[in-house]
Length: 620
Image (cartoon, rainbow, N blue to C red; front, side):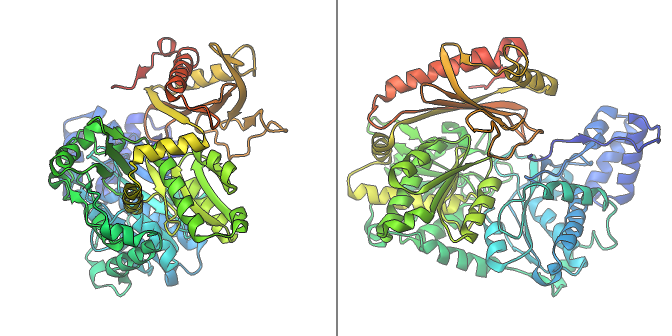
């Protein structure tokens, strides 16, 4: 379950209220409670203008609190991120935590924020963080509130490091500029999973009326319960990071030049400090994108996952200063994209799976050098999400450590990593194909700061062997087997169409029969994590947790192909991820790519049936 899919709030039983009467009730209540002049004025204007359509967008449905917290546009109303919905959400979260932790008033919570702002509604991440802090402080709960913007991974780090009950990060990561979000971590330092999302959601509904001092954010400044962890946590984080520096002497002498972009987000200063912690010369920052700017003026989408469009300015700077490698963080610095200049003069942007292969190989190789004792391997683990490349599985099989896959999303990898660490195991690495990497398990979430500097050390080390990242990636594939991946999506706004499409796959040729072929490709196994079916298991039951609220089916093919079709929790998309895993020794990547393209073509034609279901393909 992910963020902010608005849900219709049903009228109270027996109220006989129609949609319009309910809207009137919601807006009247809103105006009684909202003390932000910009949002309350905008609602009054909508009412005066009789703009029912817009009022319905603002008040027709409350944001739903999911495992990814909240994410929605900033603006007035219960379906948007604003002062009042932040107060209501935090009041509910506070009451839920009081029930779960008897020592909440001793331990407290951490809150931080990115650089997002929305002048039209007076909303900003900083203001939302202060209002959230106010809610806890008025209830006698200590709050560790960062005094300035931080990367998202600093919040889970602080929760674990200071043994707090919970963490809140106000960020919408790489979403469009008008959006904001509210991301929640549990006392284990990982993102929340069910049933906490439902419990928090219910507590929000029960605590909608602002508490007496809810709007008095100046309270936090004079409260003895307020702590500013910025300096000490920054210091401790970089000290912990130093333990993952394996080649300090190489770093000191390295001539490899790096360009870094923080894409108008929070990453610049923190990546500079990470390089310093590793004794690497600082990367050259893209000047137009180095400072936080909530307007994101130089990019269409502030998401490095979109590839070359977001990296245009980085490539120009790299060409100018003759740098071979570009490192790019998303605006809250929890993801990392990497590009390398090829001998042909082209820039190669590594996919999330390719970078996962490089970082996984590097962290294992570096760990093995320090741990010569082979018996340690049996307690060593790597994780990746089920839609990511299976390359770590291939490395684990050959090298003798454990590999596990989890459901999609770092909440699952973070929680599983914590369980393993608590059992005395070593978790070396976890990744997801959406350019998220956990290279240092002192943060139980993806971390673009540590990933950036570890990638830089890898590149510097390879340079001493006259190898590029691309050449090393090829060597990994030659040794452990080529893993060729591709991913895309179709856009579909209609839930009933999505139900029909997936229903068709479950009843392909008669009731309860999944397809046995996809065009000319034979299917050897099927796992359906919506229903819990897995025909590769003796009891036909899936090992991974299932969720009826989202669609997800994985097909394994006789030719070594694996393809997953799933719905997105945050966007109107049906996504697919396909991979061809070849055994070591099959080293014709062009032939494998051709075969994968054919497989994907067959999946689009026979399983998606875009004409039949009127699906829009991804815009190039």
